Image 1: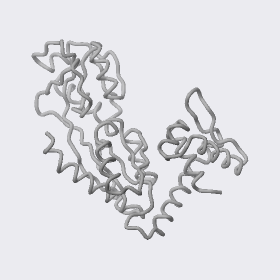
Image 2: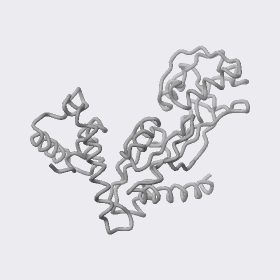
Image 3: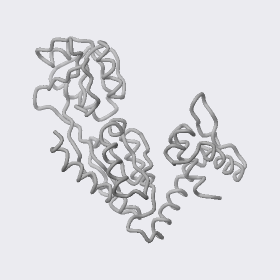
Image 4: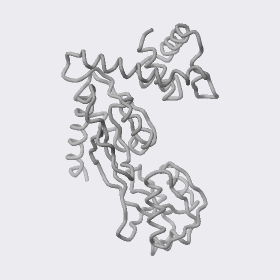
Length: 294
């Protein structure tokens, strides 16, 4: 059994699409499909099935997924240990939240491609909690995510990249004299309280005695921003580096106002640690350059 075929199976499950997985793996979709069929033939069972425009693991595929991840990780670590290069063999397996994908990741990928053109980056999107679990399990070499509201395990290293204080996001045409009064009076779009930013927002408003008129509650800052721009209400969100939208305005909130911390996490001890350390060096370099661009 070719462990690279197992790696491709895991990539397809994570991406939810053969086309997207092929793009991430730098393979032709037809080649990836052929390799999946070869793996299924080797195991004697179908591993993925189409559901609309996406693909999902079959029952058998779900059963072997965890073991497949372990085998892929072991093979990757074996190649890294045997590598004669200064860095372990690629790819760099990097997790990133949706806001990190839009803001932090592009300059890092450009810097990485210049510094290490022979080592590609395999990006896995996900929520902060999911990505942290995958870093801890060794499935990812590092992740760009939001620091949880608890201390990280001592096995993890952390680098803060930026703090994002809470702000009131409102339609530009709305007159806002008092952001807290606007949050209380206007229709309110609640950022999901299961994520760090949403929990911070809910606790902040509660502490200020504000009971917003919640119309919707959803995860996804960009999606909430679109609803605000369309006049569905206001929202309290972390001040993320999203694309400028002239239809909305960001209002600072009265101090003390909490912030969510965005940064990079990786394992302190791993055969692939040099890859994470190389990325960490690029993160620090980007942070040092950031003031020059403001």
